[in-house]
Length: 147
Image (tube, rainbow, N blue to C red; front, side):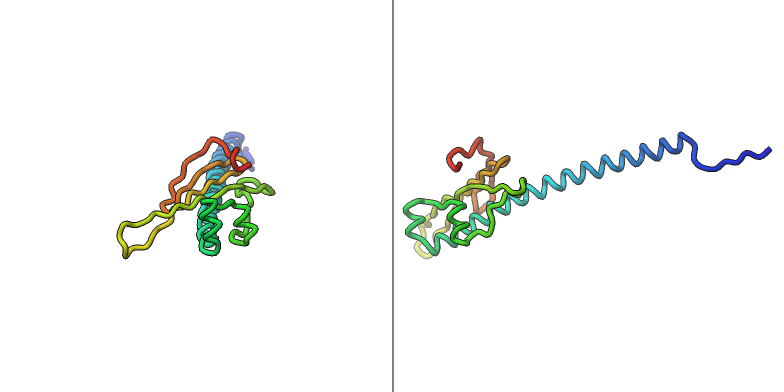
């Protein structure tokens, strides 16, 4: 008598399900890391854009920068130096912040002065201070001064 073997055994089906579950788990973890990295890059880009916008603002309005020593994100946005204040991590939210400019005077007469920009980024779940050039960043506790 010949047995008719059609289909898969229970062990083979369980093995396939386990392999699929492992693959889905790995893909989910990789996608989560990708999203977190993309958010981080969004915040870094926001800070870099703010420093570049502040440099342009300082060239256009040197007297205002000398008096205040810096400029807020809102002022840069309203003056059309920045195109957006949206929070990269949370849709429909905006970030606040400011950029403090400091001119580093060179001792040599023939060299140009350089500017250092300290950018405070204050978003719902993200509070950091960046220093440009160089791009170093420090986590800050809270943004009460900007709220």
